[in-house]
Length: 127
Image 1 (cartoon, rainbow, N blue to C red):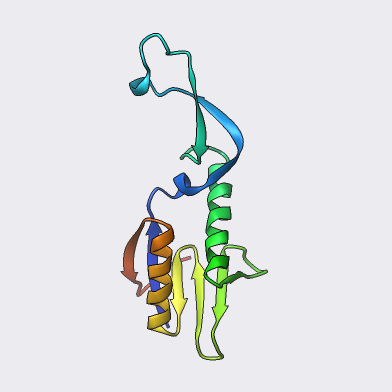
Image 2 (image 1 turned 90 degrees about the vertical axis):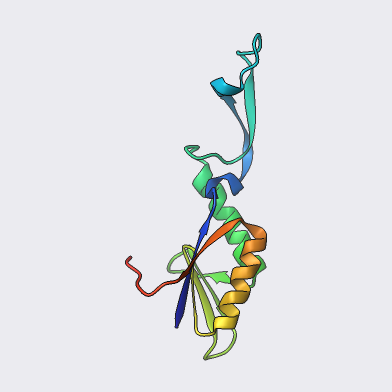
């Protein structure tokens, strides 16, 4: 089995917000005379309480789009069976599989959906 690790850059910025959220303008972006105006957020933001949930929804949608389904035991583990001997498991941006070509293919597909840093093959994993 091989384990490939990925890291999504600016993860929480990819989640789409479902409600209207407003924030004060950052000081560096304030226009003189308009300091009291607020900004409407259209995407998730680090520190926003909705950000992790919205990212998960986007990630889950992407996994389903790529033919994986979530397990009942852990909703952050996605599986795709090709046959008895070929399968892929995606666990918190670790891709585990028995076929290198399928791992590379999924890796390349995910890179089209999200900007990622490829951390390469993993030899150890601590849970």
